[in-house]
Every structure is written in structure tokens, then in C-alpha cells.
Image (tube, rainbow, N blue to C red; front, side, top):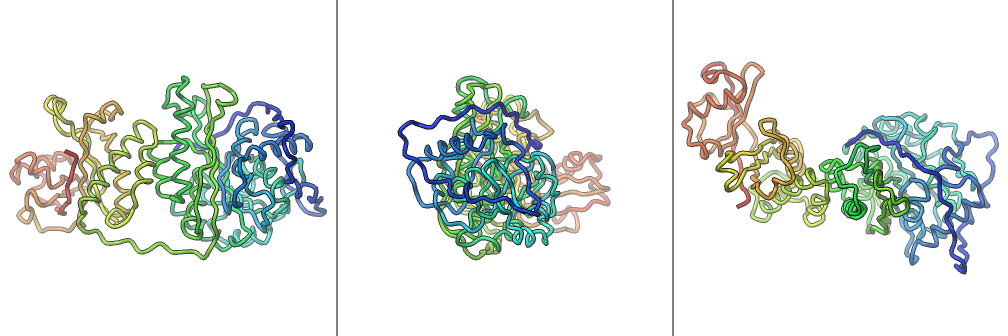
Length: 526
């Protein structure tokens, strides 16, 4: 992932309201907002730049965006909406928020990325902040909920991160226009938040959700162009369609409440979704404390408004309808067994999809997660190696091996380990980095490892059955079981080559070395 992104926002383009359109009765909360006396109010930081600073104009703009939201449906319990300048993303945000019109809410939890500070976990507003202001009035902070979260280490990020942050603020006028001045729980999620911490944060938030709770994750999607340090696609007329396709694939994993698939798609592609961390927190919450369905309601890009292809941002809106419930723990991970034919086929497809997404920056990995469940052996912790082999004339000219990297330890579910190993195999330091153009010429092989165990010495190694990890003097190297079969080496030659791979003398294995062996389920593409 790239570092924290800062958006360069142009001046806003006034949004017109269609003549003859029915008047939308959505602004009930705007007139009800009152001035809070004796309490600290977080002032609007981007009024007049990201959105209109004049209350009347802002009201007209938001009303127009909401009118464009399409047919009314059941109010969502959670949503994902963009946070760019309204001229660029207001219409997409309107489609996310429009179904909320008139909903009876008691609390809104806001999750967004911090563009100003880097930290782990969540940052809450300072204890004295009682409201957030926009030109439409003040929105009260649910100070009891904020205080409850502040007790937990997962939410000890710096309060100052809220001072000039725009990502939560730009959602407030849409809330004011649809549900009124409902108390909010504003949370910024730091860029250094990993998936484990996202799960822990979601567990704490589950204590706050219930009937009348809305959770909003604020995020723009791919940021493409030199200002964002990410430009894998040609800057021509095909660019907006490519970004829409990528955003739709990634947003589809969000709509499926699939935190694993969403995170893996972004990590493998290097995609610049600025709100990936807050969205992951939301998805963990949905996966564990929600019953319902998600829908991608809109995907667009800034180029649709600006026509500028030198820097383009994609926007997506996702609504989740259903109900909150009690927290459901994940089942214990299964123990690894022999993969059946369906699992082997899925594992190979997963490795290829991870490679393709990493090298083409498209949505193949998201598509794999849409079509396959991570269950059975794919959910079991396992060590795994992914091998990329040349085929045909390329193999005859350059040799068969093109890359092979993996992990010996069963530290994560097999599906995650395959993605990590496949992406790493594209950058095996023994070879030039793999290019996307090479993928059709390569065959993928997956080796799923058994747990390792020590043996007394070389005489206990069974060539062709055992893979071997050789360790000595802080150096180590591994050969998979199929190396002996493919090379035809006898045991001394096998171990000498292994010692050399570890950077030792060919005969270093003969004394003072440690040998650990394992077996592997090895299968590959034809």
C-alpha cells in the first residue's frame, strides 16, 4: 500500500437542481440543529472548498444529489460513501445516502481514514468536543459512546487527527439532510491498522450497534496519476473504464462483507483506496454482527466531471440493508488434510489470480473470492510454496524454474498464504521480476507443506518424499520434495546443492548442520 494520500481539490462547481422536480422533504434535521452552549464544537474545516460554505447553496446542492439517488428502497444499516469535493463525488454520495430519507436513527458511527496523521487503530475526538459543525448546523457527538470506546487501547489514536480532516465532515450534510442531527461517533482509522487490529476494533464497535444504528465508512477508491504515486494504466480514453472496472470489483468484495477478499485484492494490486482500513473495520463488523446484504449502487470517476486523465479518482457507493445482531465468533480453524480435486483446482486458480492482479492491477483476485469460499483446507493454517515454471520453448531456452517462494510455517490460512507466496514469487531475487506479458507462458505449481520435524541426520532423509530445511551457523535453505525427483540428484549431491543455496561450502552439511524434513502435496497446471 502507498502512504497516506492527500487529495488536491479544485474549486467546486455549483450543482443545479432540475426544474419541475418534486421538493424533497429531507432537511428536517437542519432546522432542528441548535447552538450548544458551554461545549467545544469542532468547526467545519473544508466548507467553501470541498462543499459550499453558504448554507442555502449547500442545502440546494445536497438536495439535488439526493434527488438523483434513484428509486427509494429500505434504509441501509451501513454504507460506504466517497469524501471528495462534491462536484466530483456528490452524486455518488447522494446515491448511497438517499435511501436513508426519513429513517429513525439513534446513532451514526462514522469511520474514515486519516489524511493528516499516521497511527494504529482508531482516533476519537477530544473528550470536550460535543458537536461537529457544518454550514447546516451542529451535529451532536455521542459523548457516552466515545467515552466507552476511549477505554480500549484499540481507540487511543491522536485526537488532533480530527482537527483538519475532511473525510468525516463531508458526510455530515448528507446525514443532516436525510436523518437530521442524529448523534455521531466520529472515528478516524490510522493507515498502520492491520487486519487483526481491524477485527479487534470491530468487536468493540459491536457493543454500540443495534436497531437505529447506522455505520458509515468514508472512502474514495483508486487514486491514479503522478500526484498519487500510482499509475499502472495508460492515461488515455480507456482509463476511466479501467478504473470503474477495478473499483467495481473491489467494491463488490465490500458489498459481500468479505474482509479477507477486500484486503487481499487491495494488497495484491497495490491499489490506492484511501479508506481501505476503515472499510475493513466495517466489513469485520458486518461479517460478525450483521445479517443482510450489500449492493454496489454506483461507481464513477472524477474524469466524468473534469475530463482530466492526468489525475483520476474512482468513487463507489455501497449500501447494506439488514439488521445488527450479537457478535458471532469465527469457528476454530480446521486442521490441514489432503486437498481434494476441487480444492487443488481452486488453489491453483487463486495463485494465478493473485499473480495476475499483482502484475496487471486489475480485479482477478476479487473475482476469485467472489466465486470461491475460503473453507475446508483453504481455511486451514499451512505452509505453502508457489512455483512459477517456464513452459515450452521458453523452458528449453532458459530453464524451467522462473520463481519459487513460500513459507515453511503454518502461520495463516492456506488461502492467504497462497496469495502472499504467489505475489512474492513474481519477485524471486534469483530472476528478473516477472512481467504481466509472461503470464500466458508460465505454469503454476503449488506445494502445501506438512509440519516440519527434526531428523537425526542425512540417513533419515527420503529423497523424493521429504523436503529438507538445512540450517547451520545462522544460514539456512530449503528444497521442496520434488527437487530431487526433477533433478535426479543422489543424496550427497542434493545436500551439497542445498548447502550452496544457503551460501555455505558444498560439504558444510557433513558436520554441525541441523536437518528438518517435511512432506508436501504438490500439484500444478498442465
